[in-house]
Length: 355
Ligand code: IPM
Ligand code: MN
Image 1: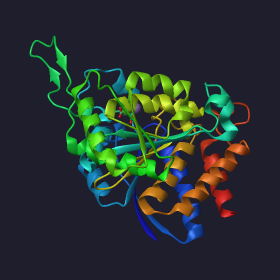
Image 2 (image 1 turned 180 degrees about the horizontal axis):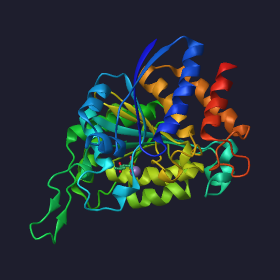
Image 3 (image 1 turned 90 degrees about the vertical axis):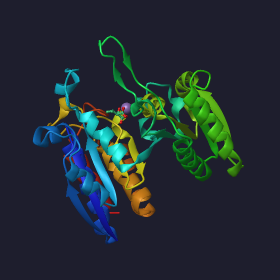
Image 4 (image 1 turned 60 degrees about the horizontal axis):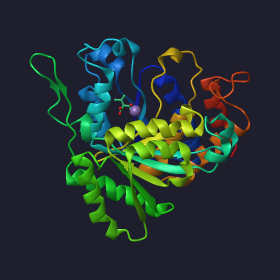
């Protein structure tokens, strides 16, 4: 199979971790006789520095014609500390989401048996936790208009907007995920306060009869935040709007013990983007110490969901499990015996070669 992959390394540790993911993908492709064409493009602060635009047109055109996009990370502290900055790296990410129609962000959260002791929660609470959070990514308060400031500058406003159509497409996707899993769907909202949440409930209720096997429950977001920590095993598939999903998926990510392990997929109308859920970790940039596993696992997710290469994806997951079991890990997981970012990549690629 010939795979056209756009590669957007971005900022901070992005380039280092993306390199490891490519290394691992190449090991799989060599073994299975696939051919990948990687084309790199600029995004984020790196793109602002070179072009003034965090998501240049050239990058967009490349993504549009690629089968999938492998994404590193964006963000640079020089913008975080300057609230008046006119262009910000994050605008690049939001523009990419909107222009590629990346309406669903999928974050699978599952514990690794060898890392249970790393979780801030008790091992008995997290052991066997396995759920998928599905976050709507192109609507809600992130994109609703009007947004801005009054003329005198003393009032600011954001607007949350959802259409039935937007809710419907993500709800169907969530039901499809539930059908392939344990057939339980938790819809997270704030329907006791928000009009958009009430439209979500109404819409989900109108679709639910099409999936009679799926058990649907509705949960207010504050309660969901609590239950995620109290009893993570109760969840199977969770679906929610953009900002609630942003917050809950960060919360969910710590359940497994390391932010450096979790991949994500953003499913789009034109193409899909695969990226680690962590940020650009600028303190570690260029030091060869960052954990590349989330990006490597995003590569596995890409093979599975963009190319339907399930066996190949499993090869990567198996190799990652082996690296964890044998302690071939970066310093976030083992300070004393850590190996470097590139050594983890090499070890996993080698393991695949010998499979
Ligand atoms: C994420 C990030 C982004 C978001 C930021 C960087 C705009 O936190 O991908 O979750 O809020 O969506
Ligand atoms: Mn976030």
